[in-house]
Length: 174
Image (cartoon, rainbow, N blue to C red; front, side, top):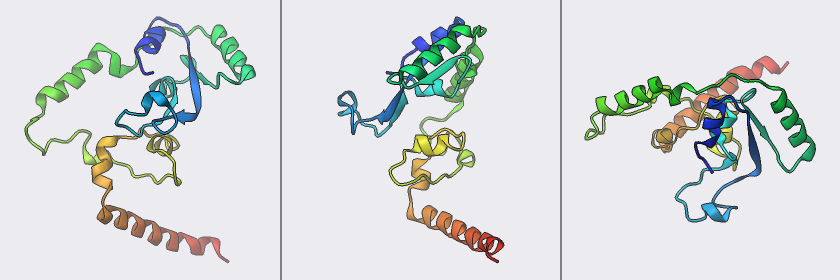
């Protein structure tokens, strides 16, 4: 599902029509993912491309003929300049290589991304990390899971929310 073709398309100035999956595809509902060791939910053929958006990417429900037709018409009217996201440029590659070679891979003290980059978000029950983070324009980062999946962290965060709620509630009660 995730491959380089969409990136190659926009790098050459083409528009990518990104098929949206509703419901998202996962190991729970798609045979291809059944034996894969992930609970990741794919919301489209290329979830990364969703974040790039128009004029390079049109994410559309391809089962909705009207929406698909409108997206194709809009895409045909676009004349985007060739575009390569920073992380796929030579500079972006050098940044990643630098991060790898400057880390002590034998030490457990080197952590990337750093814990200071963590921003907690609570989703609704059964909502994926990707959806909860996307609603706040964030990206779900699985390397943070061990930092937050502990009773101590969750208790502190819930306590903080409760205190905040108790301070804000009187402002709305007359």
